Image 1: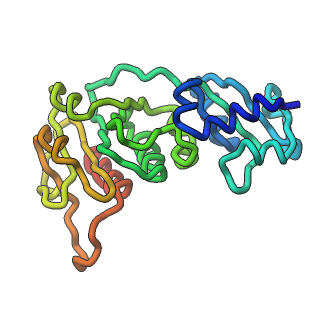
Image 2: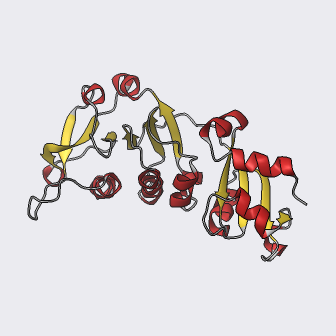
Length: 238
């Protein structure tokens, strides 16, 4: 049976400070657990509730539904929970496009953006220190396993852009239309905060200001950052 200390550890990992302290994070659901195992992430422990078929995960510990609910971050737990070791951040490869996030705070947005990186083959995602933690349970749920295939680095974004030799493109409301822009074969695309956009400190290091033009009535204030990222990555890969 699962011990109280095991439950206590899993519950503590809902908080960033304990994830950082232990170097562990939690994912839920068969698809996400499968993806992480398939792509070589190391599992610390797997837990499956006693209503599920454990034959697919023979190393998983069987727990009661009550224990699973206590450990889960979901309102309705789906019966499988994995505790994984955080992978080491790899060196950022500047031979292709890199996506950079400046203070993106919404977990759903970050999770969707990680999935977009996976879809469009963006291998490296750099995040400012004040961007939401990629191991936040809501972020992980939104990635649907894509976090296993994207190298994510948290750093001082201004210093990174200052020292990079790649051209830096930033998404701005008043930028030049991306549809008329000849994009290079590589570069850094910077996306800003949901409410405030790209900060002045980061904007100082942007070479090209680009925008997604608005064709409808000027009543919509702006696009959601994940939606805007999808459009711009599509243009980059066109």
